[in-house]
Length: 145
Image 1: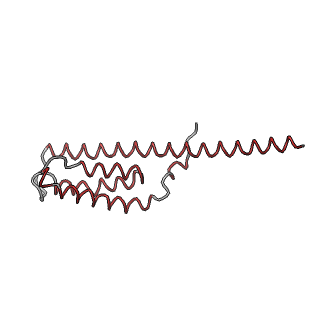
Image 2: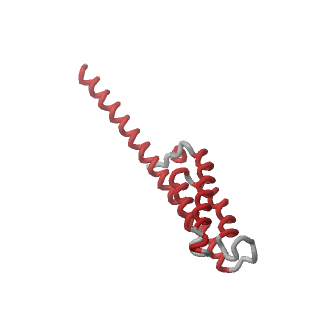
Image 3: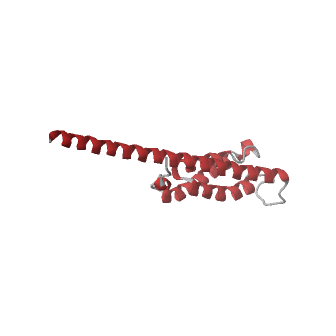
């Protein structure tokens, strides 16, 4: 099957996705910050990753990459030890940031690809249904003659 060039248009409200991405990062930050006294340095990525995957599912790769760009410095400043300051970055922090960026980019790319394929299959079904309808109508007209 040939590539559907309109598959990039699977999300009709992508511009709103950037607003929802910022709101999602804010909510992820507030949730993680409110739990800071309970979990300290554990799971600094969890809420940001959940937000990024949800944004990628509903709005695509562009808004989800915005969440990565916004949440990376927030996470590094507030949720990696020492909390509340940018200091010398050690190997553990670099590994954590690289894994966060790579994991989320791969997840977002896969979700974008799946949503495009879903859109392509919907369009293929619609085209097939319209062709069937035209074929049936043509057959009915030719039988009346």
